[in-house]
Image 1: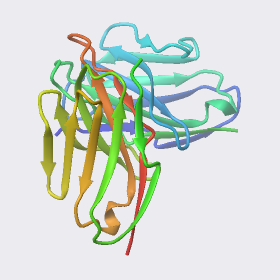
Image 2 (image 1 turned 90 degrees about the vertical axis):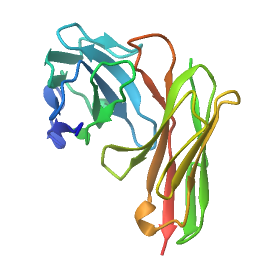
Image 3 (image 1 turned 60 degrees about the vertical axis):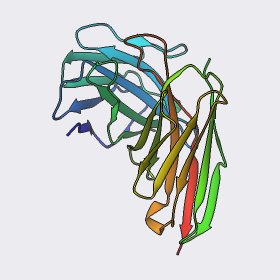
Amino acid sequence: GAVVSQHPSRVICKSGTSVKIECRSLDFQATTMFWYRQFPKQSLMLMATSNEGSKATYEQGVEKDKFLINHASLTLSTLTVTSAHPEDSSFYICSASRGISTDTQYFGPGTRLTVL
Amino acid sequence: KQEVTQIPAALSVPEGENLVLNCSFTDSAIYNLQWFRQDPGKGLTSLLLIQSSQREQTSGRLNASLDKSSGRSTLYIAASQPGDSATYLCAVRLDSGAGSYQLTFGKGTKLSVIP
């Protein structure tokens, strides 16, 4: 149990276009979902936290108008990178939690974004 | 602000050797600490989770210890195998009240086990 999927696993796009990444909890209801970004040889950096039905909370330095997060259901959250630029190229990983304070986060397999 | 440091950044050992990975954190008021494994280009696999009240957790050949007061954790891998080759990440969750689930990650230790 507690499986999280991401789609797509890999995407290449042109500079200036928008890209949507989906994160799904397959066998549990995720009250809270998290989006992380990982640059090569760096640690995972939390970008934002989203609770179902509420606006996402963004970490300092993350542009909310550039990284649009939607968590409209208990099993799906989407991250849209708008007007992508080469510096947005990274590995994006989502995680999901049931929202119970004692629960852990379950991580998706990640999405490799390359912006040309 | 919580900072997590992992030493060494990379480690290469011959198959069969026992090894220790280190993780330190600056804020000892943690809720729990978790060790993950990440294979190249892949997501994270949770290995062990230690609650703040615990001293260690074991799973098969893996043993993780936690010394909250000194801000340290170690991951011990016994009888290493080539399949253990991966990057190992340490992450801490702060004890900052109900509903706070934020994890702070270290940069990881890249382990290579040589056959």
